[in-house]
Image (tube, rainbow, N blue to C red; front, side):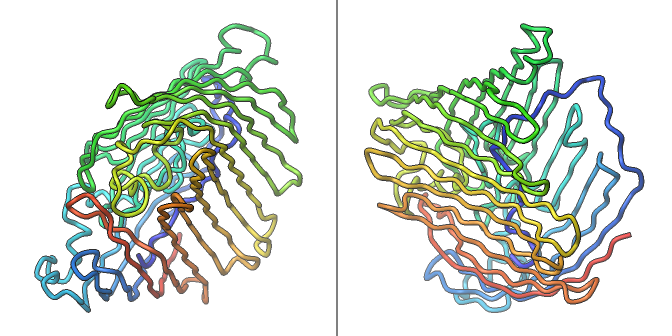
Length: 444
């Protein structure tokens, strides 16, 4: 998709954020900013049906946005893909004129007009976000972890996320698609230190959380419903300006019973370490041992879930909701790094990677995401790779986008990647996409 960012980077799996005092009102930035952009280009994209030929499109991507300090941000726009070359002529008859029909053939697709909506500050008492979510994690990620709601090329929903601090309680709600009955999840997290003690040294150190998630499976294709729940405890063992160390444990289970003889629960124990070795560098690491199996595993709603809901691994296997793993131990690791520039000439980097190894089966799942503004500030590189079951029935979802600013208001874009198209019979068809484009923008 020319001009559409392949990912919305956020550094996930950090040490738990501190409690927000309800009486605290952080100062807001003054002023309102407007910005507009138009990107045009050419795109090659697999048809995803029939012989799966490579179709050609002209793309126009207009955007218009407004930002009101740190409290409000809103952007509208959508990539419009016009079919110019059709390897399967019957497909063209199904388009809206030459506008690609699959981009606008269900109610959820119209939500792609909302590129981003944010109300409230990151460090405020409440915040609401809507739009695309490329690496969303709920709480510690025991159920919803690094989730990407726009991974399918024919499904373009807008998700919503609401976070609020109510006394010693933090509440977070998430919907992957605000216009369809799809994935809904929530977490209630209680700061036990604030409830049981008046000593400030105990605040933000003992966090008890309850997570629930349910996918109705009706949107972007129909798939079997899936529910899960977990309870977790996080203890801050070390908290200083340079290093934070958390010990965490969790138990989880499938919320519905599909086959009583199949175990559907798991337990996990691990560490999260966050540090700042330099003023401009922050690194977060997570290591966790897990006991799980049957139809439950931690991170059920993960990076590749929008494909796994059709085929747990590979392209034509059972959906994730019906996939059964033997009871096994697994090891999960994750690392993220942020490099903040001190000047325009410095490197700006946000990157994270995760992986899980299942002992008894040898299965390996991995996910990596990168966004880098190269020194000089003119070139940006974005990469996302989601790798599922590398050792047996592998599935690779990889996307790369590079943009370079030639003039203050003119930039070029190049992108390439793999795609997977859900089919009516419930399997996936793999494909490819690549494109080139040019954009102009301004801000005032």
